[in-house]
Amino acid sequence: MPDIRLKHQPFDITFHPSEPIIYVGLLTGQVDAFKYSADKPDTEFEYLQLFSLRPTKRSCRGLATNFSGDKLYSVTKGKAIFTIDTATGQILETTGNAHESPINRVTLTFPNILATGDDEGVVKLWDERKKDEIRAYTHHFDFISDFLWLEDKRQLVATSGDGTLSVMDIRSNKGGPLVQSEDQDDELLSIAAIKNNMKAVVGTQLGNISIFNRNIGWGDCVDRIPGHPHSVETIYTLPPNLCPGTDIIATGSSDGMVRLVQILPTKVLGVIADHEEFPVERIKGDMRGSMSWIGSISHEKVLRLTDIGDALEESDNEDGGGQSENEDGDAVGGGKD
Image (cartoon, rainbow, N blue to C red; front, side):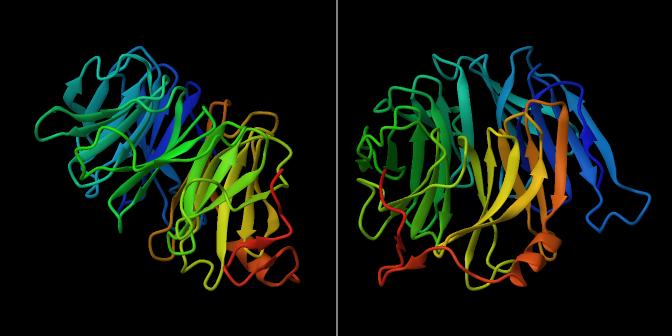
């Protein structure tokens, strides 16, 4: 599929949960929706813009859909949260001055509960039925870079530029986290779950991937995996049906490369997309059924959709290698820096 050309630099992307539609938030505050061909690119139809709206002139920093896909949430540098009707492209609700600082990330937890994180490390929970914040967490002191929602424990994990991650139980009225990790001496930029959600991989500014083990606790990472020459800005975990018996993640780095990396045992499987000298800001995936599209964006005015099916088939034909695992399932040979 050819690149989807954008009018301005993108900041975030998210896929519709059940249809071949992707949403893009831009530097200008604009939110665009594109429908793309779910089949292999051998037909005339490739992509079509469904709507474009500009709720604000301040940059759209983060996007998330609800579980049904009929609502899209946009958070902005202007500290606002916009709820958009995905069928019409119209704004349903605006929450102005939702934070005291620009909002950097948004994710959905329960069906009606949003989590937002800002540039000063504040995390807030919102119940859209009450149209007001439920709770605010202020234990981080630098930007919230990413969220991971753990459905089995009803816990929200946040990573921060202050070098720590924290775990919050959103059912609790407690104003602080369940646990906050030790300072990792590095900015934590991205997070994703592996090993049936029992471990998490965290991308860092120095280019290492840190592994946290929930069975041991979130206080410190159990291993660090080197290999990326520059920062790991974004991580996406491939679903088990695409890589049965192993864990594979897609990483986006500030060197402009999108890589497939097998974790525990660990090896880099290859580069699947190249944004040249522009840092990769976000990766998301459409892995419904037989779909295997990876969407990636950088500082260029392009949304790149990559079919990773062929790359996975090629990696299956290669010899193994890399690190081995110990009896606890942790990598041997990585070691902490």
